[in-house]
Image (cartoon, rainbow, N blue to C red; front, side, top):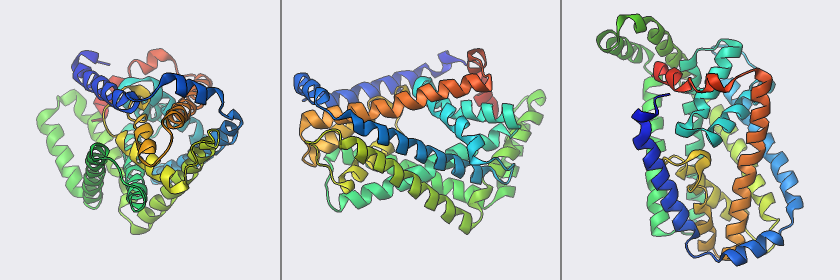
Length: 335
């Protein structure tokens, strides 16, 4: 992976994470947050984590649905790969978890990397659309601050614009094929044309699920189920902090806004973007110390269990870290 070429992205991600962390934590009193953490009822984390992994299983089913035109891979076989990808996003820069799971799936099942990465992007787009709906629904009851409203608006426009582009290209596979062939013939060395042509065909195949209205409805329906389950996890964890007394709608608004903001560049694990949930909860009347301790614990259990399980699955798959170090090259060849 050529880090030198990507250092500006690292710098921007660091700055975004730093600014948002400062924005979220600036008025908190650490002593009060610590007291809230000590008095929390952590037994509620157990069902919270269990519910989270149920939502991950549904994500694996959704991914299998997107991949079915290439190869039938059942959800129970995709579940470990999805977890490995989440682990990668939590500890690797540049969102390389998506490339990592594409590599693992290619390594194990021989599925085209370009197609796999395309389906991963489609997943993020449907996630973003669902989060946008959660935010719009929440805003009927709870307002956001002007700063967060601007950030959410930017993220929403990004997701919607990308979805429109993908729908347009999916409906015109021959146009996309001609564009890819033209670019490859004019801008790519001869020795790389054949593999890049194969990857471009994979991208076209990965967009197949957007060509049928029924499939789009199924994808949106499953994505809605995924996030309703994940919101239930957020609610269960909130019960560990009795002073919060959060409504389900308030949690939908917070979760939707926070996950939309993950579209911004940030440090691995979405450090900073997720912590904006503290400001959102304070805006809807949550006590500052309880809001801060809740978001910190919620973020931790979103990161730690899936990262540990991802490392275990990675060892089972026999993927070595030396292979992970070459993922940047794989990503470049997939573009």
